[in-house]
Length: 227
Ligand code: DC
Image 1: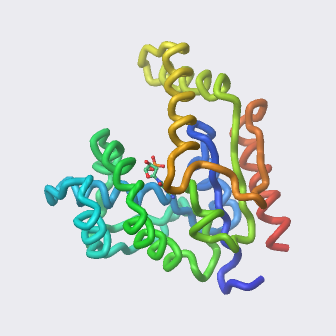
Image 2: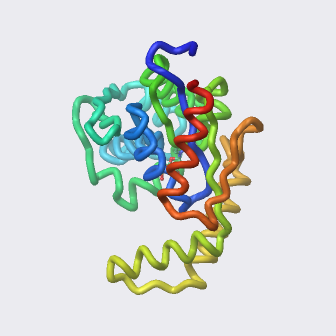
C-alpha cells in the first residue's frame, strides 16, 4: 500500500442513496476516518453568508475560501469533525440558506480548487473515506477504491417518504419523486464537476438492498484493494 495510514476511498452517488451513513459505518468498521466533503462547501457558504460577501462575486468568494483555516479532529464514530477558523459550526451548516449558498459557491472553479487542496491535505496519508461528487474524479483520481452508489429515483423517493413519515412529517410521493428527478438532472448536467461516476468506480445499485447490505458491500470492496 502506498499511503502510510491506509487507502483513500471515494464514495459518490446520487442524492438519497445513504452515502454519508454508509461511508461513516464502513470507516468505523475498518478503523478509518470519514469526511463528508460537502461540509467544506457548506463552511465556505456559511462564512460568505456571515461576512456579507455576495455569493455571485467570484473574486470575493475565492478570497474568502483562501482565508478560511480548516482543522479536523477524528471522533470515536470515525467522523472527522471540522473546525472553521477554530470554531465547530455544527447544525448551522444544515440551515437551508447555507445549503442554497453552498450550491452556488460550489460552481466557483477557483474556490473549488482551494477546497480541493484542503481535502487532499487532510487525507493525503490515507486511512480516509471521503464522500463527495468529485473525489474520485478530481480530488483523488488515484484513490485506491472508488464507489458509486445509485438507486432508482422511485426507490429513493420511497425511502424519503418513509423517512419523513417516521419523523411525523406528511410526505407526498409524487412531488418528492419529481424533486429528486429535478435534482438528478441539475446535478448531472452542471458545468463544474457534474455528478458522474469515475470511469474506474465500482457501481453499486442499492435499489434492492438494505443499509446493512450496502455497508457490507462497501467494506468488502475496500478490503479487496487494501489486501
Ligand atoms: O453533500 P452536501 O449537501 O453537504 O453538499 C453541499 C454542497 O456542496 C452541494 O451543493 C454539493 C456541493 N459539493 C460539491 O460540489 N463537491 C463536493 N465534493 C461536495 C459537495
